[in-house]
Image 1: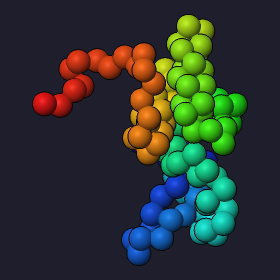
Image 2 (image 1 turned 60 degrees about the vertical axis):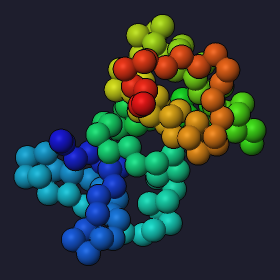
Image 3 (image 1 turned 30 degrees about the horizontal axis):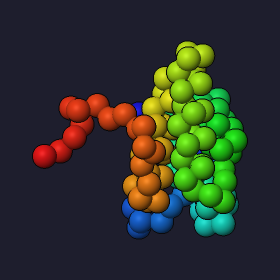
Length: 124
């Protein structure tokens, strides 16, 4: 996996650190261990594996649907994912948004009444 600017990694002592820059030729990285900055950058969770453009797309889509009513937020996020799929949006961004949707569904204990689940993912 390639490390990108904005990724959050953990040091050997277990402290989180934010990658602020990376030299692709040498692999050297600059980091920021300020917890407030890390918290701001991880508002919607750790998004390691997304390049900066993908991360921007993810955060934009996620910010569009934020609501005080978490059920409404779940519905809006699901709708936004559907739009991105129809527009042939970046598959990796869609996958991260789907993961975020699952996280919200579990955290809020709310499943939309017409929510479709692939039967292969159900556990007996």
